[in-house]
Amino acid sequence: DDLPAMDNAETRRGQPSCHRRFGEAAAILVGDALLTRAFEVLSADGMPNTLAILRTLGQAGGTAGLIGGQVLDLECGMRNGECGIKELEEVARRKTAALITAAVVTGGLSAGASAQDLTRLRRYGERVGLAFQLMDDLHDRDGLAGLRGEAAVRRQAARLLEHAAQELVPFGRRAWLLRELADWLSRT
Image (cartoon, rainbow, N blue to C red; front, side, top):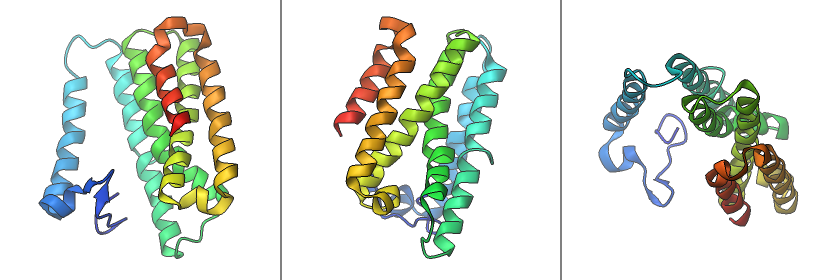
């Protein structure tokens, strides 16, 4: 979404965005290449739950997830950024939260997690993903932070991270990395 037709972002995380550094055509091709390479790698023989993993990633990146969220984001832009809290939360859920959730759930799928554990991982990912977007909006001073205010957004993010951490309790020490991710995010 950094491309000129969308956000036209000069930088991403303090570095020149791909289209600024290498040109728009190269940036589009890099995105296409990374996406197709991911499906190629994941479809290699021997990966447990390959079809479920591919389906999870396809849904997170498709119209129900990232692409659909980007469409909503573009619609907000066409209205000069006039979007309400519910619309911006839906954008965050379909973009940031969907991708973070997919990363967490596909890890569980590749490890053979039970349906109950996958539900816990999904709820963790959704909450951490939305909290991540809230913190990003605080950092950028826009989006939900601009509408709700810094204090309200910090409280919402803290609640989300607390609930996310609760989802990990049944995993014990096995979830140390996910727990650290939520802890790190709570300190940003």
